Image (cartoon, rainbow, N blue to C red):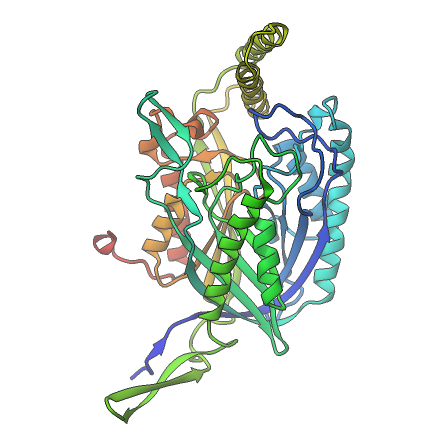
Length: 488
């Protein structure tokens, strides 16, 4: 008869960690918000960091997998391809062994090389040119301190994030902001890696748009991630890395502000949730195991910390990609978008010349131009006549947990559904990996006027197709799926 245990997902691997400061110049081009009336940053709130993880099987250190977590927002495909090519060459990794992912802060700098003529835009190209070299310095640090670790995975909760598809009934429109009636995934996955000397890594996987700081903010900032990381590292000897979850429709309840103190408060809220989860996790490589009853005022069960059963796949390490071809929506033409840009620019110029025009008119015009420019870049990246685009999911199994990494911004339903279907397997769902892709909405959320659909390129059914493809691979790997009849 199996010994009763309180199951904790465990793993063993080799791990190396490196970190380097990647803070841009304090006056760099800062236009990430359409509603912003400034183009150039005016200072630094907190530094931006690049953290590198080198991960390999316990018995095969040459099978090195590398993940770079960057305190940046996003990149266009052109810039992303350049960075990936440089990092692949510098690390010697194959495509399935290399991940670059973004925290998705909206308060870093705009990384579009075509904005070079904008105020502060002269910093964009030098920054992008230097970024791979900085990341490779972090890689060399990580590779040099590769050592065996025990992995423990805990599940916590944090209510920082709220669903953000809000219906403004008075104006008969959807707006992107806290929805009091929406369901919000509060799941926090915390992975801790330990050596004999203590904790080396605390990894927090949580889904929440870093949109505390918005158009009113003029400082370069990691948003809430900075204070979260600071708090965790103050209370733990380990390096803390944040990995963004499926946050397509999740954001902070208090957001879209200009006050960095709010971002720090949001970060501390998440940081305390991480620390709380850590306090409830077992010692390295151990789990609570039943020993025997003892007669007291009641007959109680005695449990103690013990090593896991040798049959468990604690040393398992594998990585594969899942490749899909997904349909795209009907997109406007380059000519249509350029005409819209010209129209909004003319309205902006007219508004700026009219002394009686309120600032909000100028703000809206600038925002509309920014939306159009972003859509133009997306359309230009898709060859004419294209009906489908290639989408890749990277999957790494490390012990008893699986990392699911993909480009784009899926709605929270992806991680909710996968975790319901595979409750026995801790899943780290990580977005914005290696490619920009698109928002990925549930089929029923198309056609109702959401911002996410307005800027998406993938057609209805994309999220469901991703879920099925990931589920099929998990089943192939032997993960137990909960019967559909039990999923409620």
